[in-house]
Length: 137
Image 1 (tube, one colour):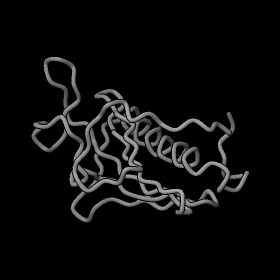
Image 2 (image 1 turned 30 degrees about the vertical axis):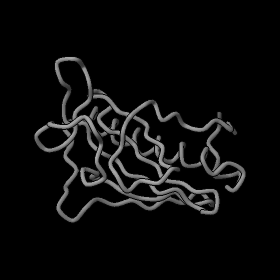
Image 3 (image 1 turned 90 degrees about the horizontal axis):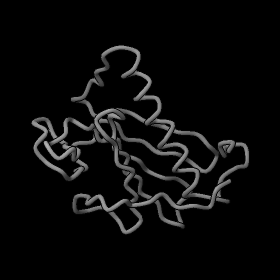
Image 4 (image 1 turned 60 degrees about the horizontal axis):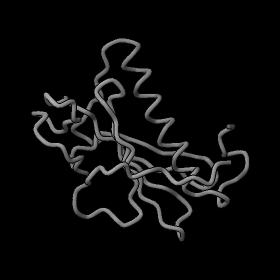
């Protein structure tokens, strides 16, 4: 099991996120930016998945319906969930969201992002998780 914390990678996030917020930036190919919240006294990690909606001319990731901002805001999250200490996970979409995929590649990106949220959450919780919940290296 790695003991490495995910890098913040210099991505600003919207107000209201804790000091224990970790952002794993996406790109237009990957399709999702992950925002994970964890505190050492929790037995779970909450996550948000914010879709990447475009890139500007400098190749920087954009968010929002109109692809108008560089900052992943919690209100843009289409999927939210949590990963618990026992390896179980719960996730859902907002009531007004139907996740749209165009072909198998989009489905693969979605499942890769969900797997990424799980793996990073288990890393954040470290030894608080069941050994069976930890991904193999």
